[in-house]
Image: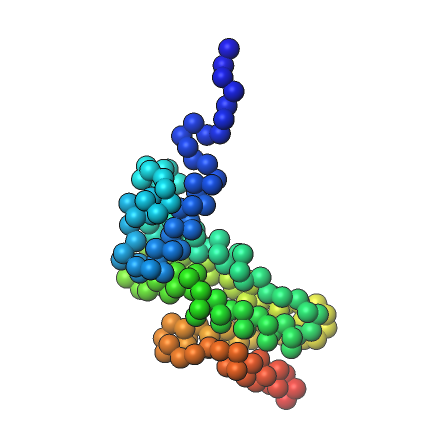
Length: 195
């Protein structure tokens, strides 16, 4: 007679997996990309190093997965039923995420690493950019469905105009992306629609 099965015999529980992902965010924010190691992740998460390697091949894979999970949880564009309100709210949300959160620090570190590793860069763009691009476009897509924007509206160009300055300031100039800045972006965009 076999014994009842109590979870995965290799210890790959969802709780342990989540602990590693949380450890990835914490360590990257504290130590930077170079300071994160598989050993450090395992120690912070309270799991064996082998447990980490069962799910991920490298620390970069752990960091990307942690980042993608954070994005899904933190960056859902609000829907107020009005383009002006949606843009102001989403641009503020995105700016805060990029500049003030641990997840934003993870993003900046991964972008920096992508400059040094072309294979990683291609994979990161495939795994991150398409989904984030969809989120960034969502307020505009909703406005098209509501009739606030024409169906022929160039959503890609408009998305670049709206969120490009946030990424530029966060990644290049390190200038503030506060509420005043994001509100000015939204206002300039909305004014351009009336011309």
